[in-house]
Image (cartoon, rainbow, N blue to C red; front, side):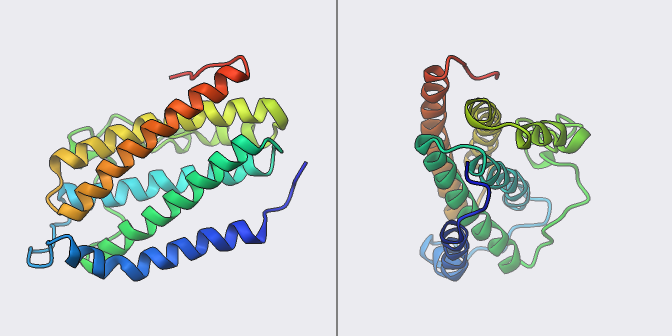
Length: 210
């Protein structure tokens, strides 16, 4: 069982974030939004960027956890793809907040921008629907092999359900075109990954809990 993180994997993820950060200014201008007034701090654009950055960070964390708990190549490949993609996207969203000169943390509760403030209590670290609790993550860390694979897939499936809902709301509510397109891409990619996760769970005699 592998117990240490691959330097290549970490470096690859870090490089993706740096590439994304370097492309932020170009992406905003290329999207045709350079003439727009920056979004307000309480806008859907800012709220989505902040909330999805937090949401993505946990997905990256879970992916690293399972990577060290299994040798299964299918699950490890999925975890790698999720970690790299979502670290990249998180870097872009935090970069936009910097460009807009908006805070990365808000006093408003999560998901207020989409009219769902209060849907998540934040209890035990689950700040938004679909996010795993600290207790669930601690339990995952103690597993290995097939048990870890199943639990990771179930937690990530639920995580994607919440992420897709949030991204769909941005497609409807956000005003910055490049951010809307990023959100639409998230919906398509995560729905595809959910199908893959369902298939991987079925192969292991399990199913999503959501």
